[in-house]
Every structure is written in C-alpha cells, then in structure tokens.
Amino acid sequence: MSDTCSHTNKIDDFKCTVASSEALSDRIGWLTVRCRVLAERILPGTCVMVFPSDSNDPLLGRPFAVADVDINKGELSVCYMVIGRGTEMILRMSPGSEVRLRGPFGVPLPSVGGKINIAAGGAGIATFLCFAKKYPEKTADIFLGIPGRGYEKYAARISELLPKVRIFTDDGIFGEGNSMFKVLPKGLGESERIWSCGPPGFLKALKKHYEDEPDKLYFSLDKRMACGYGGCMGCVVETVNGQKRICADQSLFRADEVTDYGN
Ligand SMILES: Cc1cc2nc3c(=O)[nH]c(=O)nc-3n(C[C@H](O)[C@H](O)[C@H](O)COP(=O)(O)OP(=O)(O)OC[C@H]3O[C@@H](n4cnc5c(N)ncnc54)[C@H](O)[C@@H]3O)c2cc1C
Ligand code: FES
Image (tube, rainbow, N blue to C red; front, side, top):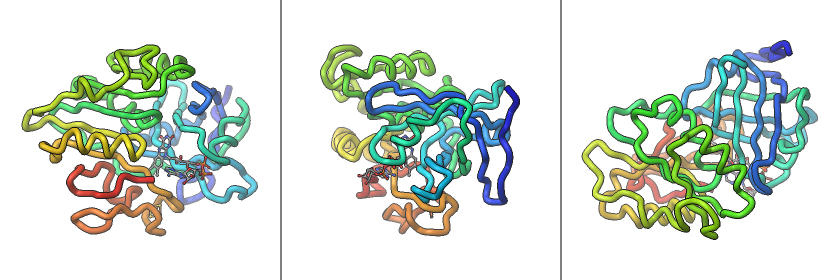
C-alpha cells in the first residue's frame, strides 16, 4: 500500500493511515499508523497526539508515548489504556481509515551512561519501549505490573518487543508473582537508575520503596495536555526547581524533585 501520509500544516500535524487497531485486553489498545515522515522523526520517549475524530468533537488530541517504530514499513504505534471517550474512539478506528496525528513532542529520554532499570505499571511501559529496544545494552532489568487474567495478549506483545521484560500480575495467574516490589533492586550503584511510569498509586509506592535513595528514582508523569508545544501551560508539573512543562521542558522527574504524581 502506498504511504498516504501528508504534512498538513506548519505545526506538525500529519494525516496518517491506520494500519491496525487492536485490543490487547479489555482496557488496553494498540494503534499502528502509517506515516513515514513522522515515524522517522520519533526519538525514544517522544510522544504524539492522536485526534480521535476529524469533526473537532472531541476537539483535543490525546497524548501518547510512541511505543514502537518500524522504519522499514514507515509505521509507528501507540499503546494506551482505554479510559474515556477519546480512547474508545481510537480503539474503534478501522484499518485503511485516515487519522490525524500531531508531533513528535516532549523531551526525548536522555541517552545516559549508567545502568537503567525500568519499572512500569499497565500501559506505562509504552514510554520506555523505544528506548529499551534501541539501547538494550543500557537497559538492565525491566519490570512490568499488570492485572493478570485477560492481559495475556498484552503481556505477549510486550515480551515480543522486550524479551527480557519481567512480568508481575496482581492475581498471580501468570508472570513471576504478584508484586515486583519483592524483587526490585535496592542499594543501587552510583550511576544506576530506576525509570518509572504508571498510575499515581504505583509511583507513590515506588517512592516509598526507594525512600532511602530517592535520587535514583525517576518518574515519567502524565498530565492533561492541550497544545503539546509549550504554549498553554496545561501540562505543568510543580518541582523544587519551579514549574516544568512535560511537553517542552522535561521528560523525567527525580522522585525527590516532585510531590506531583501526575493525573
Ligand atoms: C505526555 C503524555 C503521554 C501519555 N502517554 C500515554 C501512553 O503512552 N499510554 C496511555 O495509556 N496513556 C498515556 N497518556 C495518558 C492519555 O493521554 C490519557 O489517558 C488519554 O488522553 C485519555 O483520553 P480519553 O479521551 O480516553 O479520556 P477522557 O475522556 O479525556 O478522560 C477520561 C478519564 O481519564 C482521565 N485522564 C484524561 N487525560 C489524562 C491524562 N493525560 N493522564 C491520565 N489520566 C487522564 C480523566 O481525568 C478522566 O477521569 C499520556 C499522557 C501524557 C500527558
Ligand atoms: S500541553 Fe500546552 S504547554 Fe504543554
């Protein structure tokens, strides 16, 4: 199929073609779109806004981390929790239909020298998928917590992309047990880090777990977004260094820099 992506205006909106839209559990969707120009611009940790409709209802795009890029096919994917109207509409998109994406936005994940461990809850792993795929040598252990039954397809997709992911399920039906907190490394080395993303309760529990070494723990936070380009101040996080915009200033926040755990 030809690449039907076209650049629609100067603020980096792209008309893309839906390659596939799948449910990987009753609450997790995976959308793959074809747009070579946009796919080639993605750096690990950057995001796109997916517009659920062309009719301006809903008006705002929904922000998601880019979970995967296939440069050969000119495709990119997002992985998302289905929680409201916008994500329900995205889940219903049909292959071959047109969808508008804006991006990429956000600050790419730093290409650090030390050892990175990843701890994610639910769809939070999406933020780190491109990084872990691109830099396997920099990524130490990857921990993912999910509910369990009904999430087998999702677990299989993540394991396919990140063969060394360690999966934990709340119900203990599959994976390595019911809590990653029993095995998360502590006493981290000087250049070792934990990068994390997930629901606020999960991030709070991580902060408690690492209360003796909060400088080693970093959060990727979700906030409500409108513009994606630093203009609306909608995505501000309060930090000890002042307000930071997720879309323009900072992608990762040290646990002891913030009291905000995102939305
Ligand atoms: C930079 C960034 C990257 C993100 N990446 C991902 C990702 O890779 N995968 C993923 O599943 N989600 C991600 N999110 C969250 C995602 O954008 C929201 O869940 C989504 O916009 C909700 O759209 P909706 O129309 O379905 O829900 P709405 O109908 O708008 O809202 C339904 C419920 O979801 C809550 N909600 C709305 N927006 C957010 C938000 N930004 N964060 C948390 N809760 C929200 C609302 O308070 C409400 O309770 C990201 C958010 C940001 C800011
Ligand atoms: S979304 Fe507008 S400033 Fe970040």
